[in-house]
Image (cartoon, rainbow, N blue to C red; front, side, top):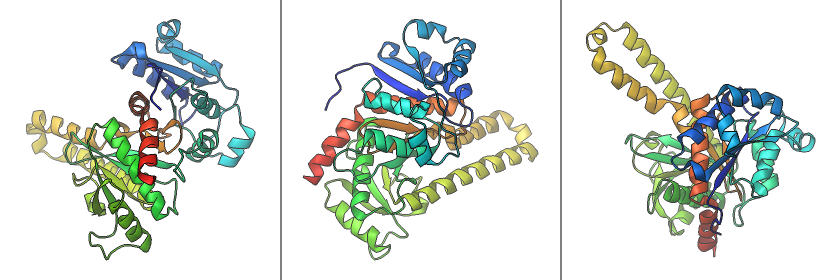
Length: 348
């Protein structure tokens, strides 16, 4: 299962998202220019050539194309952000999203990144790539900020499955644990199960059964995690059903936006910050940076036989850059092979 090709190629759905090539192309060029080992990385921009080419020229990407580091793969269709997933799969087989995923299936790319329609991306990726043997359904996984600024927490599922079984929650735990171990380099990651309380008697029957299975799984299971511990250092992986996970994620994003807004308003109106501006400004900027969702952009559709990273549709160049970097890290560290091996090991 180990990779033979030392070059990591990322297929980018250049037309996806609210802004399309205006964001995806400059982010791809910036990604390549900031790679420490540029000779081992490639990007394929997939989409309408007449829409993509002007941005390659505008952001001085011609040199990268001449070296073969940045290439363009034509696709004649675009999946709209509000398009039903079934329609996208049946009627748009030459969409930039579908072609980018096909490149992963064919081995021409090791990862796909898209800011497009989440439902269409999940449905198409699952149809084209299939799930890893032993995985019932893929999950959506992303990193959350942590009290310790040097750490992050992987959380899954964040909305792909709203009816997860206890066995599926164990599968999510395995995938999150492997992702944390090989991408974040944390040995024996601590796994927690999101619940309404820390006591064993609390929670739904599904959660209680999943807890029993996790305790017997061989993973480093730390027990229940409550919502007020999401940003603590208690665990490295938080497992939950897609319904609870999506609610927690959206509530976190809303809270972060509110805090950032309040801090800025207070900073502008409070007279004493004018006297201590030299100190206050770096502190405020540091807090805003930690809360900035762009720095945590890039949710993995984990459990598929290929790497697919979903960027937020409304993100900017910086946010999409972080999604590209996440895809690159997972491909470089051969996450799919490690998940496949761990799933086989535990369920056998």
